[in-house]
Image 1: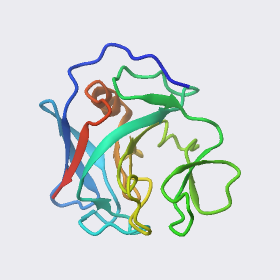
Image 2: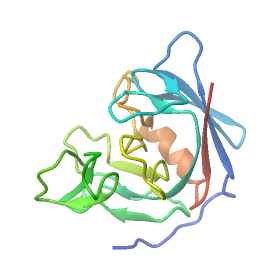
Image 3: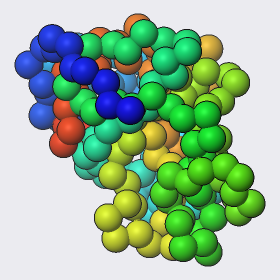
Image 4: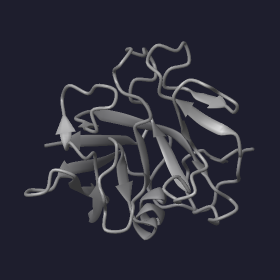
Length: 183
């Protein structure tokens, strides 16, 4: 189900994610003259992303849309296409499967991520185009921009921010906004 857009700020063309010195699983997210704290992969950043390595890829990834748990969060204003997160939505992370790095519906036996998580990390979950267009097996899947755990604990390779930061960021996001991860 598509949601109506609300008034948003002038969209940012690029959001920069820079590794934070002294802590390989933390980063600073910069956009529109602001800087926010973020969590990144437990293994830091890498130019050679592989499935399961726990690293965030050094890359320029475009935002293509995302999901919101409407039962937990009121949809923040944004020009980015957001959908309600369906109850049975999963994301295939099994590199040998034909639907690798694609959304799938439950029931689904191969390895996958549950998109309606109990811990709230995907209450707002934005999809970046990492390894989507021409998928490379074992090239990494489910690189999302989502909500951070308390204390900004490391992710499995995603970029994660607090809910207040996400709400500020969403006002500047649209389809095609580039999330650039740099050293």
